[in-house]
Amino acid sequence: MAQPRVLVIEDEQDVLDLLKRHLDGLGCQVRTATTGELGLTLAVNDPPDLVVLDIRLPGVDGREVSRALRADPRTRNCRIVVTSVLDMEDLLDINADAVLPKPFRRADVKKAVDSLWEVE
Image 1: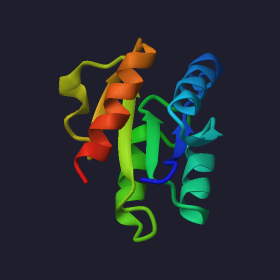
Image 2: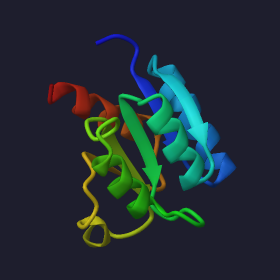
Image 3: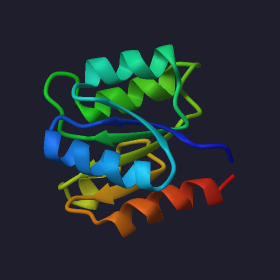
């Protein structure tokens, strides 16, 4: 696969910076958004291969973003990895391809991303 295009939607700047650094290190082209609204706009205007999505966002939260991405023909095929401190049971209603529990390490990010490309 060519260099994966990844959109990270995360409101905590430290976590956003860490995810960007890890994904850059994996050879991904990374764009970022700090709100669900901005993330949706970026995704629809230039659909990424992968969205790394925090569930607990102010305003439009990660669940709403995930539903909107799956409903839009331009973004319905992009992969979604959700990040959260919530228990796995609390994430079952989200149509995500993978879950990245917080806190995470670089190896966790790599494993989550690699698992998505193996599915193809």
